[in-house]
Image 1 (cartoon, rainbow, N blue to C red):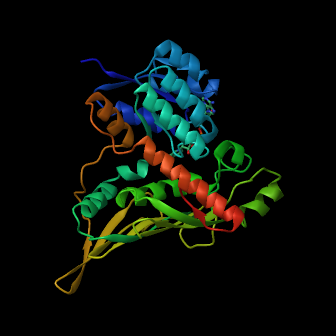
Image 2: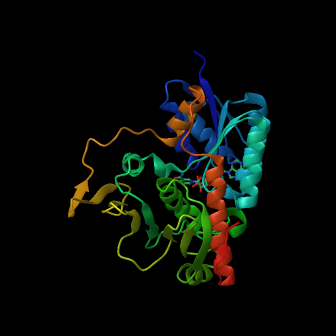
Image 3: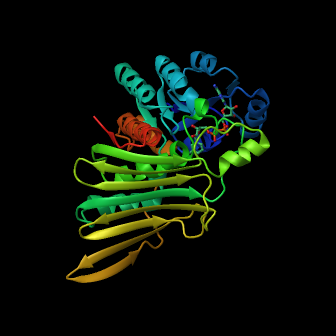
Amino acid sequence: MKKLRCAVIGLGMGRGHVRGYREHPQCEVVAVADIDKKKLEEYQKAEQIPEVFTDPVKMLKKVKPDLVSIVVPNKFHLPLTLAALEHGCHVLCEKPMALNAAEAQIMEVTAEKAGLRLAVNFSSRFSPQAFAMKKLVDEGTLGEVYFARSIWQRRRGMPGFGGWFGTKALSGGGPLIDLGVHRLDLALWLMNYPEPQWVIGSTYNKIAAPIAAREKKNFDVEDFACAMIKFKNGATLELEASWAGNIKPNEMMSTRLLGTQGGLYQFNPDGNYEFQLEAYVERGGCQYDMKLHPPVPESHSSYYSFADAIINNKPFSVSAREGVVVMQLLDAIYESSATGRPVELP
Ligand SMILES: NC(=O)c1ccc[n+]([C@@H]2O[C@H](COP(=O)([O-])OP(=O)(O)OC[C@H]3O[C@@H](n4cnc5c(N)ncnc54)[C@H](O)[C@@H]3O)[C@@H](O)[C@H]2O)c1
């Protein structure tokens, strides 16, 4: 059987995409592109990549992959996604989908017109705990979900001053668009993406700004963001994200859902990337606590799952539309912070 020919653009997190595609027996990684020639050559040698390119568009032209991962600084998500679609490739684009919702919409419409798949790598959905949570919500264990609180805070975790992450023109924003985007999507997915009504948000740059100034490095994004999103169905979502904040854990990730018949809490108790999941329910007038114990539900990575969806012509869990909605919410949070007013969504 012919294998799905996958290519990856960008060799930071892109290395994870290569590993993910290689886990699928019907996928092969045929090429990788990165503007850094030295990195590219070392990686090709270490990982036996058939072809490497310093120009991603040349790669698309010459190799014509079936599926391309876009794993480059956020500013390049739009042009490289459009280039990949133009060359007939399905696209898995890293989060955030683009610098803003207007760009994300162009990507969505172009993919639709081309009849190709475009998905965003909301990888937080692809953990065993996330699958277990989704199952509990969808089978009604929580009743009506009316509140969620989703957090990704770092005590000190700024990804280097002077780089693209801290430069708004390249990244579109700080921890909100970098970390918050994952926890926002996770909560929205669990709540079945209710239609947003209005947003109020605040961003701050209190801790990183003075350090960047001392080091004479650019840092023109926030280091902390918080928001409240009200949905048309009456539900509310609170979001917090930071690269710097005076909290106890080095890294704190959690998503909490409250429903009329139960609640869920996914969290990383030890400040690392190991999650636990607890559920709290009321049955027959009594309160019960539950905990997810091994064996956890089987789960595959987003890369494996996206490739598998293309190979077997199945739906994939993340849509371009969801990527656009997330960008609309992030835009609204930044706008609300800039104006000091709530922002109504259309
Ligand atoms: N889903 C996740 O969990 C996750 C984790 C990390 C990063 N990301 C996302 O992945 C993307 C890349 O982040 P990163 O941490 O890998 O950054 P990085 O800076 O570590 O790596 C980016 C790579 O892209 C290359 N590059 C830059 N511009 C390019 C271009 N125009 N064409 C080809 N190559 C180019 C750079 O040389 C570099 O090797 C970002 O959108 C980020 O938000 C997602």
